[in-house]
Image 1 (cartoon, rainbow, N blue to C red):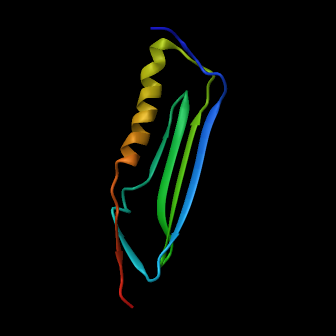
Image 2 (image 1 turned 180 degrees about the horizontal axis):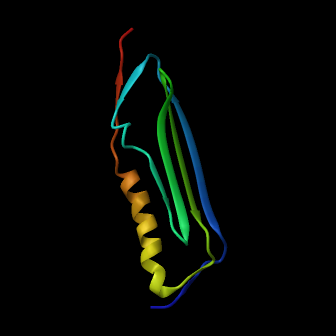
Image 3 (image 1 turned 90 degrees about the vertical axis):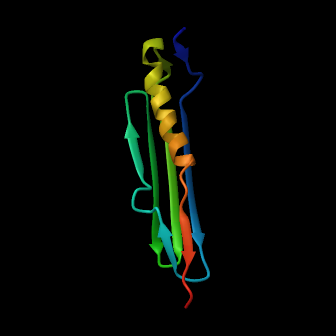
Amino acid sequence: LLNYYLDYSYSDYFMLHLEFPCDIDVLGLENGNTNYKNDFGEYFFEIKKSKNNQLKLQSNYKILKNLIPKEKYNDLKLLNEKVKKVKSKRIIIKLKKN
């Protein structure tokens, strides 16, 4: 019911490199990326093969404003829904026999 005042700006950066003992195939990779931005925040997620046996995951979440007016709360909610959607994605990694 009230405007939301953040104590400080918030951001979260995460990068993960996975290396496998052999070459891999990744199912679900083609639609795994997300890049969303609105007036109050932004979210970027990327998953890609960096080498034939390596997978790179990167997630960047940032709140851009210190004040979110109550009438714009749905914009923040939509941003957070993008994060939830990425968190619930499943990818299948198939190890190739050499």
